[in-house]
Length: 517
Image (cartoon, one colour):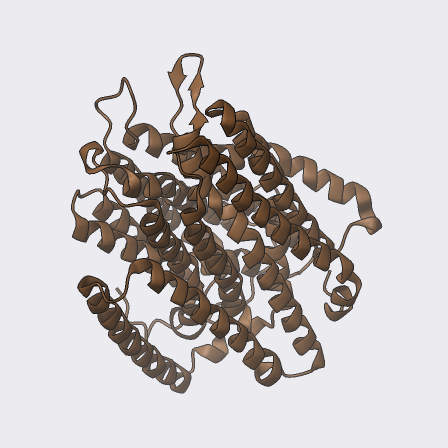
């Protein structure tokens, strides 16, 4: 492997596609490399996620860890928080040290190692696997999206279309991952051969395919994702290495202290997860304050970075509800849903595939609607508001389903309806957010701004794990009904309020975009 200090060839801005060159649906050929890499990475992530909280709450006799829902939800929340939270330092490392292209490669190796570690049936390898996946995804996730943007010299509709195609790859992988991994790993009647760790191993195989595909297709990236010229100066590299070393030292110290307190019982995992939420939310706000007031070079940059903050805040609100698909709604599917379909037991994890297949089916429809609207196309703030309102509608469906628990387990149609509304909301919010962050952020801060986008997702994922403590208990029907209505009704009210605020203040936000549409 070349020494990072010597392998510093700075690539030119990607050139326009020549008429004779092969393309990927009319887009740069490098988009295909990123499409399939992200597809297999998401296969591994969502396949493993479909099993995670079910594995932790399954009794030891069934091969699980036997944790209660509160503890398992806290671990789930911390894990999914870490997966996205490390996108911020992952973006910084790419911007300052190695470039997005190499960050994606290094992250992929760590993710694959993490899934294979989960495939080993032991407590230490379980937590080691989670840690490796967190570290690897922090490097890969923000930077592969940044490379997509780097493939295009322009910042117009063609670039947005490229992101839409890329987003489709995410959902192809997210559809097949839960189906395959839950089929191999989730215990059920008539399948004595299944094992939780087979499912985790399948996720590792998917990540291995991602690495093979990415390595073979890097030549099509045409300079996209290389370290930028101003970051490759020797003095900047030396300063970045010193900062990285200091950061790693502080992180190692914190991990050692927290690990010791947790093992001694002085810091329960639930209390730690709550503390992380409050501390990180404060740091998130403080980071944006510094960037907006001290890093921005002029009034236009300051306004656009403020819009980035609003978008990240809205994303955190949205994902705190949406990502309950892997926590609270996953437990609802296992414990309170009748999953018998034509005499065949559908795995709880398989229901995680409803959202991505709906995205695959509905994304072209939503895209056609936005195109048809033309100049009447809603602003990004309005689309964010619509996404949050639709999230609220989905949770109102779940509150209604909880009322039906008085008659016993409910049918799968309730969860399917909820995922339908959540999917339409996601299509209104997420692709717009990904593209807007790369357009609003100054070029020197693109990696970090993509990191803050995923930091919003991190906070939302942490909240999605913490709410499992309010899941309807199965001991009594009355408690199941009451707790379900309170939990899902409260989430619906908060999401609806946030969505309406985005819609009401859409015009001022649009002005602050300073020409970016």
